[in-house]
Image 1 (cartoon, rainbow, N blue to C red):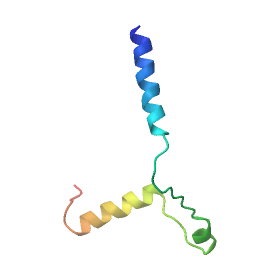
Image 2: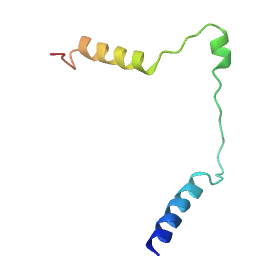
Image 3: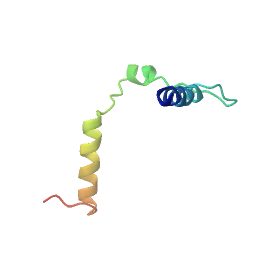
Image 4: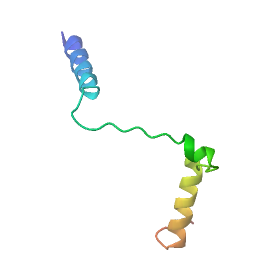
Length: 63
């Protein structure tokens, strides 16, 4: 009985996630900007730049 209740609650949450809403839906495509030569940074590069910036601004110190 408890297992069925847990499964129902889990499925109920999933149903709410995909429920239709009365609001605009937007999609983003990076194809055009990539075709113009823009290169996106990797997550690793973004974190490295963030840490470097925080150190340069004095918010973080590296031992």
